[in-house]
Length: 142
Image (cartoon, rainbow, N blue to C red; front, top):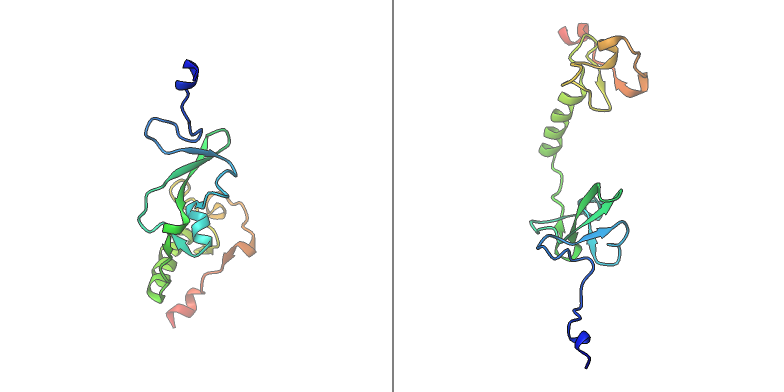
């Protein structure tokens, strides 16, 4: 054997070698039985306490997502009526305008920055298909 052959080492190109998790490029994790949290959720699964085994990068490494082993994932918890009611109450706080209109929108409002919906803040008209009109106040008093 040549002296140069003895110095050769089999290297995994996805292993950074510094003890951190391997970084995969976009669309490289498809055949590795790995999935992101969002992909697990679409399959009806959750990570189930396991640590990520890799990360997938896109946009030149500026964005990334953790990857988990699908075979170690556990089923999602079922949604109960109590959980659904609590979630609706929390979302209502983020979607309801505290201003004079009192509308509940189908999206979260910028309450930290504007304090109300755009229509109450600066008069920009809201699309009627983007909110639920509040109940009439005279009906609530009855």
